[in-house]
Image 1 (cartoon, rainbow, N blue to C red):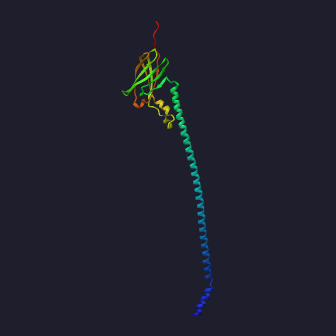
Image 2 (image 1 turned 180 degrees about the vertical axis):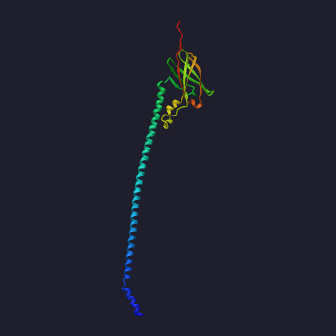
Length: 237
């Protein structure tokens, strides 16, 4: 029995299979180590690429934010310049409006219907004093009662009154609409009224104007001009 066991052990040691198995085991282990090393190396490479791309993306985002900040600053500057230009335009519009009224200072007057003072009004043949007695609702409009003072010694045989009326103009509208002033002028209503009454000399002559159609808020602006082409004088005997 002892001899048989020794014989089996000797054959096993002398057999090539154990060495082959050991070679296979070592070769497989080395292969797995290589695969594992490749996987780990690939992982680190991917991580490095990911970090590089992430850093690059972050830098690009920073650059974009800086550019947007610069654009916002430029827009703010443009808005400030535009605001300054708008104020200048409003000032110019106001001056133009004053010039339009003053170029023929007394040929066309703007009357405050609530005022009890008087204004001078010129015509081609003389000048007059215009005063508002009152303005009251009448039908679908207003009746404006005027006193026309004739300070001269001339009697006028009939006359024509040209009126314009509408809402008052607010120059702040120019901030949002540059054509607001011209549009406002176009919105004004106008009427020519002929009278056969005489304007007696050195007298306040009462005249009634019927302004139709008109609402209360449409009489914030009221213009008046006048035409006289027939006069009467005393003849020397």
